Amino acid sequence: MLLKERKFYTKDAERLIHFSWYRSHYHHNKRLNVVLSFLRKYHGPFVLDLGCGDGYQSSHFSLYREDVVGMDISKKRLLRAKEYAHNVDFIQGDIQHLPFKSKSVGLIYLGQILEHLPKPLQLLKESNRVLKVGGLLLLDTPSKTNIVDDLFRLFKITSFDTEKWGLNLDPGHIHFFSYKDITNLVNNSGFTIISSKGAPNIRWNIPIMRYLCSNRRIWWIYNLLELMVNVIPTYRNKGAIQVILAKKRNHIPRCK
Image (cartoon, rainbow, N blue to C red):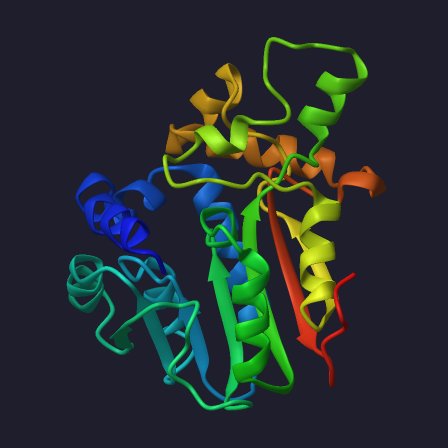
């Protein structure tokens, strides 16, 4: 990781506390629930949460696993993580250069990570290196392939940017992927996609949805709308945050 990136994430630890933010917004709760639904079915060797931040996801993983390891570049975030997640081992380091032997990890989780990296393919290949053959990659990232953006494009509604809104969610975002972009990255780094899910299916940062997203008492309305979208086959497995579960193949294809 470059020095300027290290400085950014050191400063970012002051700006945003993950526990309070994630707990209070529907889209992060939906994302966590979908990720946990995949994790609960996993029974292999240890789970590695890369870019674990304040340990929000790791703390939930540890409810189902006793062998969770979290890794992050920020010392401050890891200090907070240790306060919340007592059954997780945390280590500080650059997730793009993992201090693990090849074929030693069972499952890697990349939660809201790929959009921050100049070279996301590099991290995916490094993840592939340390995963056992048949090991699992679980990731999520904002996506422009969702029912709201597709409807805006269809009816040529330009008031809500469909191509760049994901870049504006966080000052650290430098990529905003489509579903095709994400699947190509995963496939080109030596994985086969097993399952995908939108979490949430509906984009949350437009006026009405933003209100529903930030008011826990009416999350049930957001959830009802999501259930309606899930009836549509095209959008059942796609969303404004895309969750992907993939399995390591025996070899990494050469990128063209």
